[in-house]
Length: 371
View 1 (cartoon, rainbow, N blue to C red):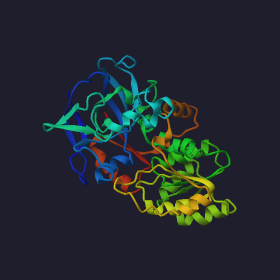
View 2: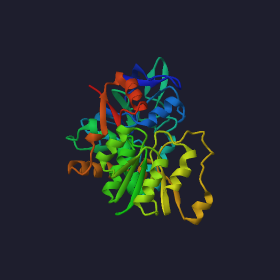
View 3: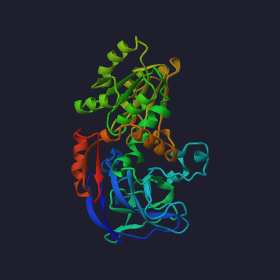
View 4: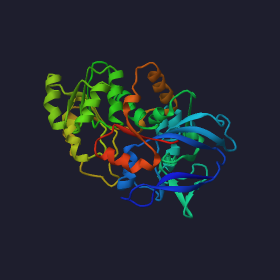
């Protein structure tokens, strides 16, 4: 079949809207008509080259849609089912899945190639070339073919133009607080960077019972939104936040510091550690450039003598098959805000405008909505 998709043909180029040829699903795969896709900063990393990709690539990894066709062997999904994609597939069988860490499923090892899990080939083609997919999903398209391991079935009354955000940003931010940081009632928490992930880290910290949540971002609009999501205080930088946290905590500093900047920078980790209390924890959720392998300016003596912790978190250290339904349940009960996360919606043809708005600090999250 023919459909439309946003393709990146080279690094530092705009997304190009193309008519593509889409093969039918093979064994273990499904054809999905996309309803909406979140415009995550991670796709911007493909454009800048901070995240290596198998170019040409269809972007998008935060999406939701309706199953149109299932391939051989798919028994638990059928046409008409509504699904949200988890940007990391989960097989349910590997050691990580078996230990309750679906975010580290062995199938994720193939994400960089962006080809189909089953046979390492492509179902998406344009101008006589095979196209790879961001996270093996390619949600910047009207239709896509994905492996069933990437699908989470949801109730048909869920508004997919909102729920698409659970495929990455919501779970990643919320889980960074609830799981990776292990925020406890009464904690003082700093969230550094209030975009699509940081806003949800704020919500997660609030739900976990944090007493003080300091949202740190240079953009005033984002600081104001953070207060709506549950932040108690804001600062424009970690340097500005230092004195505030010192005053609020009577000098003990923050129990948890969660890094959710648009682009990670190892040189600022020293500031994050300085904000952190004895036995406190810094969670690094934001993506760093792939070639950044040195320059993390932290005191290793401080790490030891103060028993501070520096940990990484992928997909919020969560389990998408359990956590996506859980967050939808909290949303239904009015305890979690999905609506407020969406600043503006765009058609597929507006993708470059949407990413410029993100760069300009105008959006918490932009969403592509397909007709």
